[in-house]
Length: 562
Image (cartoon, rainbow, N blue to C red; front, side, top):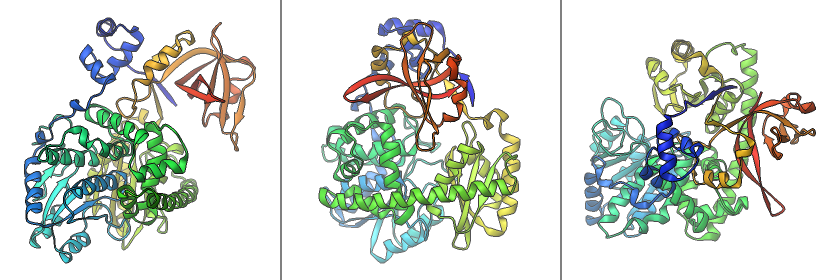
């Protein structure tokens, strides 16, 4: 692990903000590191309000999208709501379709089959729309590069509205409206919305025609918060507002489908981490193992008993997914060792019978062992399909773009992407990808980095500090959980390994004459020798609360020790 201390911000800015907020400079430092420098910015950060959301009509083509939907309703046209099979896509489809159905019944949904159709808008989906006399398709979380598909639909008198958040190519599809804040010609104030977030802006605009306020639309924010958490978009600006209020809906009055998922896991109050690791994987499991339609059915169901039935089926899919990704990870790791590919700048593995639905998860697992930009390939029809995952600071999308001559298609983000290629192109692509990464990646990026916000003395760890840090939630990219370092600490004498495989570390630590604090280090069991015999060590951690037998105590969640 590479420990780096974040650059400490301008001391005058910190002092000014500390005075304006009447907080310690330590807290002001954390705020300035997050780009919050004034009283007003801090107020908006700590007290998000729905009024902070932008006017949806500031988004390019929003007026055209709303006009086309209203025309379709006036003419009794059939509307097809189309979306990707992951969490962002299925939540977006559930959101827009369930909203439209509150006042217009001629609406249906379509999720492409991951194995038969692949990612994004498909010709099969358009044929389905044509065969069933749909004249308008609203595409969510996909479509920004679907130039040929939109042209194909136009020949069949089917209009498209694209709602996407991925990077556009050189040309845009010839759709009635293209809602994407990442368009060069779109001046919308916030361009980090997820696909479901774009869908929410669309219903926000439609709601204005029905004299609906933003409060009328808050019941949909459980879906938006789930998508924001799952898609790992920045937890800033509108995303932070939407996630904040979405979590309130999840914890107070979620839709039956999400309530049924929470019921399965039997946890009272969920934070954003629970959404990422508990709700999102289950929604994703439907598209990975069976079909994304099952997720849309669950999220659109308003009968709780029926939702519970859907949730139990999805729980089974999630169990199957866990078994698959565990087995494929073992096979992929052994392939890397057998082929002696550990010394390169990339990890690229392929086996034709690996389950396409879990290769993205496997890529993430491989990075935990070999910290490299990673691609996991499997056979998909007569082509090879892959999921890409990257390491901190390295743009895997740009690397794929540099290898585009070997690819059939690709798309995605800086840290996650997907692609297909012809099998005969695999060896050349693999060499090209290794070459591009080796020439463009900084050597430091090949070591996992822990980015530390500040040094903390144990005497500064108080219930008041915990209360303040809780107000920094919800956490996510660009507003991560604060990470601290404390130096020259020692265990009080009884460190122990925990877990079935003894992979975790449990300590009770002190610094100088401070009170002792419980500490838990997941995955750090192999470092127990660093802390035995009360040897001093440095610890990097985040602050946590542990509830046991009705008592709440502060604990350190260790990230690393040296």
